[in-house]
Image 1 (cartoon, one colour):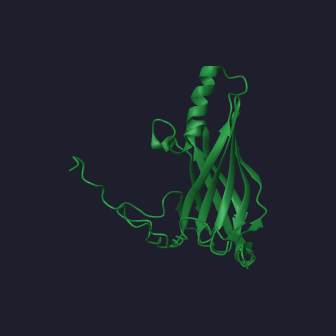
Image 2: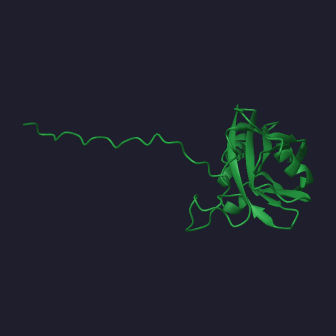
Image 3: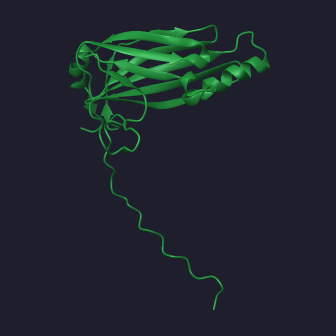
Length: 199
């Protein structure tokens, strides 16, 4: 008789396909149509942020953001103090108010802030009441003299016609509230041009 009892059988692996949560991310099996949006959104001596495109899917829009950090003439200690908050952009700074934040104002004047599409006590399976803006991505890399990173902002569903105002701020990087404007009137037409990867 062994001292150790036999291990329990492992649970059965659930191999069934997962349903997509559309307010959380774009469809993975769709090729988007592109809205030509290229604009420098904000910059300082060391930081620059640009909108480099808007991918329009059948049920939402992904705003594509590129961020850059350059060292310039900073010494090693100054560079580390700047690079740390840049790389930890989600909650940089001593206060949450110092972090990088995004939001949009829709053509109907509704304001949507980036973040999870569910509030305290909610869950990811419950769709938002109206619209949601979820920050995805955030990948990046660099060296001792520069750093590049990106963010994707998933706006669901397709916004109404009119002006779409993109707002950002990043106090930890010296960037105050900044606004950029896109014409969302063509988004519904572009959404119809999205194609499946497999016919």
